[in-house]
Figure 1 (cartoon, rainbow, N blue to C red):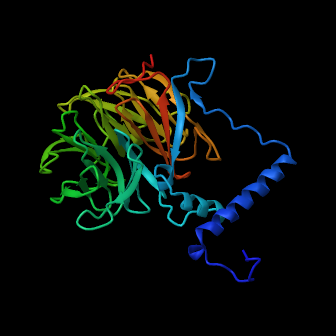
Figure 2: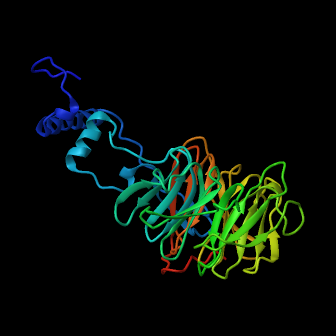
Figure 3: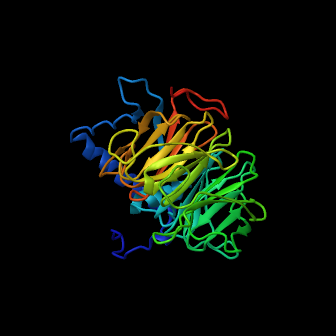
Length: 373
């Protein structure tokens, strides 16, 4: 860009605000005049709802989280700079998401490329990253879960540890330093925060496919659930876990293409799902979450959606569709899912580098979820 007054090339960072305002105003005026001489733009499509008509809609697309500016307010000058240059010099955000957790307007996302946890604080209009510095440095964070007091538990598969932070990202402690964990890929807390369930993936050639139950404070091993196998209560490449309000533990048993349910005592209760390409079946199940009503949400990486089941394992509905373009409700490689205390759903997509947010159409009081039956 060249100045018509001197022929010199101005440096954007040193350009007076008044000049930027005139520049952007001229650009906007030019665009408006051009628009008058052309066909009016096609109206934006309405946000997708699920289920689609003619069924009664239960959820509607709300927003997408990608960068800090999706939650942070920007000054007037910063907005003008973004409009003039087409990009923001300060943008930070998602590169390779995996797990997601949400509560009270705070959305936490693990990012394996940045080796960090990203915090989109929608309520406070604030963004930050943590887990990048010692002693809480992360290597490959996969899954995460939130305690009732807001503490964040992060499974680091490469460090073979679970790192614990407060709600703002201050490192509190590290669990698993005694060699208890081999390849932790999933974490979930019991409703009373007394037990931490860590999905230990093991490996293709070993038999240590299990869930390790730890004391959330000391990290002491309390119990081991399961071993490698295809039988009920056994696992083949387990991935993630979630707990329901009644204390039921649900584990995504990826290699067996099912979800298994265990009681608070660690005893097997039931399972649902099988290999297939039809609703209610699984191809590449990944993330899992539960809502306040006890419904179970399972991400399928191959289907490009989230299937929702009741506590009996019966399919209720699905949310999202596979797509090649990052549009609302379209996913390519969904990996993580979370449901907050109001029944809002958060889906992380690794290929499109986003977290999409869906809200119940019917207002839900805190601690409740929409009736999906």
